[in-house]
Length: 388
Image (cartoon, rainbow, N blue to C red; front, side, top):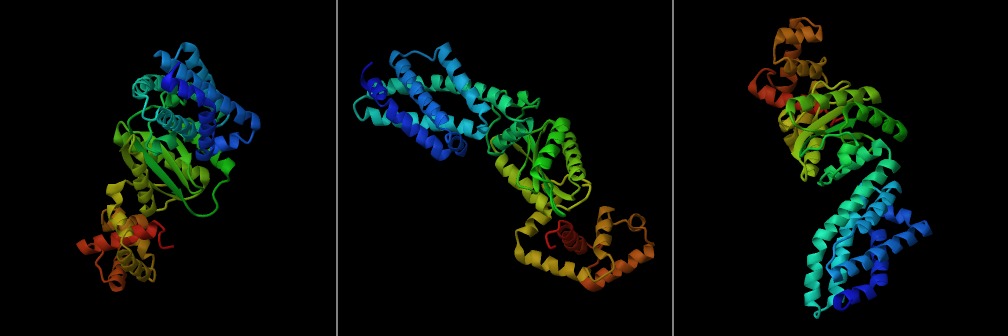
């Protein structure tokens, strides 16, 4: 062994210690694990062993042997079983890549161009094989050391962070892997929410029925990702889950949904969350709102002067007899007087009286073009609970 490879070999201990320090600084999961002195020592021993083996093989131009990959698989399995999150398990591989390049640069200086070129050529294929072996073991360990609910949440987090599902993870959860998802955000309101233990129990029940990545993010929000093949069928499945959520929690909820592709789901989730914030709060959701259903409300929510103007109209309507509920029923029944009166269990003349009060208080005709635009937006904001 000579040149760059000898320099890397001589610096193995120093580089391994620095790598462990980086892992502990960057990854809270590793920091917690390293509170155990034996675990920290094992982490350092592995960092030393891996660097020595990489220097040996690269010097000979040889690939990782079967026993090397088995070692990486076993180490990954140990990490997964120790409760390290999937995000941290993947992040540590990225950090190793960055540190490896840094170590090569520091050792080579300006005098080892040939060996640097050889080393850089050796890394891609072998690095990929090593990562694959480590992740394969990690997922095995994760399956043994983590609950089904936690693993489903790990998959959801990976997808929502614009990552791709690790090969084998969806299959281990009996879930379908796809490149397109309908993200559904359920936002709860109306009093105290279930405890953390109860939330996990609810998610576990939902997972048994739906088999999709999901997690309870923050006490008042649940997110589920439905593989989207047929949009209409997928929306009906998601609506079923939302209704089950409302029933299980005993809390009314507002929902929002948006469809996006893998590697771009963070923005999709943001849109779904915004939709849920302007959607109506219902004890049993009647539909699953998407952007085309609430585009007016989305625009209004981003314009405070318009929102304040509409709120003023809402306050005036509050002085009338059930005017908000009346207008909501009127628009939901496509402005059909008889159907609206029947739904409200009132006489059509009573309905006409309420419309007259709307005209007096808001200065708008409910059935006019302007009335539909303005009053429809007012009702949507009231039902979303944004002014309560």
